[in-house]
Image 1: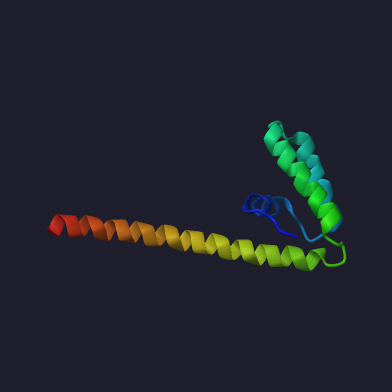
Image 2: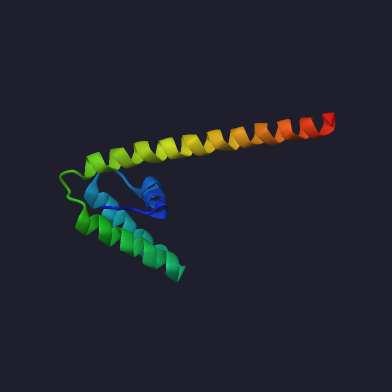
Length: 97
């Protein structure tokens, strides 16, 4: 199963190790969502998880997703810090010249 980054972020925020609970939670979120585009995306993800992911290996899939998204957030944070230091050094260079 291939997931887009938006779908991964949704599962990261609302998923849990239980396949049944995750699908139920996504369907409830679909019902509570007001925006039609977000509702369509959420329902599509709920159906994808329900049909394409076997319940027997969902827990491994979930933990792999959590590790992947934790690494993504860590790298994003590192990039943000690196950018802040780079901009600072460029300002020092402009002042020196």
